[in-house]
Image (cartoon, rainbow, N blue to C red):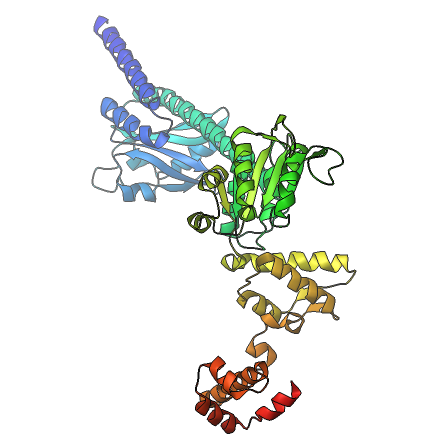
Length: 519
C-alpha cells in the first residue's frame, strides 16, 4: 500500500514538473510557432507518447489543420486536414468534448488521415484527443498516440492533457491578444500617418507622381520647424505654392505671410521695401514706414527670385538671417523680428557664386533646407491630373461646359516637353477652354507650339536638296533686306565672297534692285 502511494506521489510530482516545464516553454516567446514544437516533444518524451499534434480551426474556411506535431513527417502533417465533425479530431473540435479511442485498430471511425499508422502494428495504439478552448469557444485540439492501457490510466492521460491544453489555450489567447493589440497599433499608426500625410499634403499643389510625393514629404518635415528654406526649380514649377504650403502647415499659419519678388523691385527701393524707412530718409519719405520684415513679424516672409538681389542688399539680408535684426533706412534704432524666411530662385546659385554675383556666406545661410521642385517633363504622370484641374477651374470661371479632353489632345499634352512647366500648361488649358464649342477640348484647340506633324497634317515633304535650296534662298533674302539690296554688304554678312553671292542670287532669281527700291 505504501509503495502504491509513493508511486502515485512520484507520478504526481512528475506531472507537476512536466506542466511547469511546459508553462516555462510557453512563456519563452509570444510566437507560438517557436515554442509549440518543443512543448510537444517534451511531453511525448516524458510521457512515452508515440505521436502528438496540435490542430487549429480556421474559422473562415471551417477547416481544421495541424499547426504543429511530434512524430509526424511534413507530408503526413500536410495530409492531416479535417472539416468540423469529420473524424475524431473534427468531432472533438465541433463538440468541445474529449474523445478516447482505447485501440485504434478496433474503431472504424478513426480515419488516420495522416497515414502515420498505416504500417504493421501502427494501429495498436490508444488515441486521445482533447479540445483547446478559450472560454466557451473551441479553437482546436491536442491529440496523442500512446501505448494501450487500462481505462483508468487513459482517463488520467485525458486529465493531464486537458490541463496541458488549457496552458496552450492561454498561450494562444495571450498571443491573439498581443497580435490584436499589435494589429490595432499598426492600424492606428497607419491612420495617423495618413492623417499627417493629408494634413501636411498641400491642398494647393496637385501631383501624385513619386517626384511630387518626395516634395510633399519634405514640406511635411520642414513645416513643423522654423528652419530657413530655399525652394529651387525652373520658372513655372510652382515655387510660390510650395512656400504657401510650408507656411500654412506650420505653427505660424495664423500669422502673416508676406511675399516679396526681389526681381520686380528696383535696387533703389528694395532696401526700403524690406527694412522700411524713417521720415525724411530720402526725398518723398514724408512719414515713417514699416518694411516687409516688420510686417511679417511672428509669421513668414517669402523672398522670391533671391538670386537677383544686389550685392549691397545681400549684405544687409545676411545680417537679418544671422541676428534677426536690422535698422530702417535713415534710422539708427536696431529692430528685432521673429520671422521665418523662405526663399526661392530659378537661377544656379553655385555658378553665380563662382562669378562673384552671389555671396557664398549668404548662400549657406539660405540653403539650410533646400526643396527642389521637379520640372513638369520629369513628372509626366501629373500632366493629365493638372490638365483636368485647370479645365474644371477655367470652365467654371468662364461659365462654359467642358466634359472631356480628346485622345489626340491628350497625346499632344503628353508628348510636349513643357519648357514653361505648370504655368505654360495652365495657359494652354485656359486657351483651349475658351476655344471649345462642343464641350470637348480637341487637339486643334492647343497652341501651335504643341502641334505635331500628324495633328496638323504637315508631314515633311521634299528632298534634302530642295530643303537646303529653300533655306539658302531665305538667308540670301534676309541678308539683302538688311543691307537694302547692297550685294557687297550682304556677302560680308553671310561670310562669302561677292562672286559667290552673285552666283547664288542669280541661281535663285533674286532681284536685288527691287529690294533696294522697296527699302
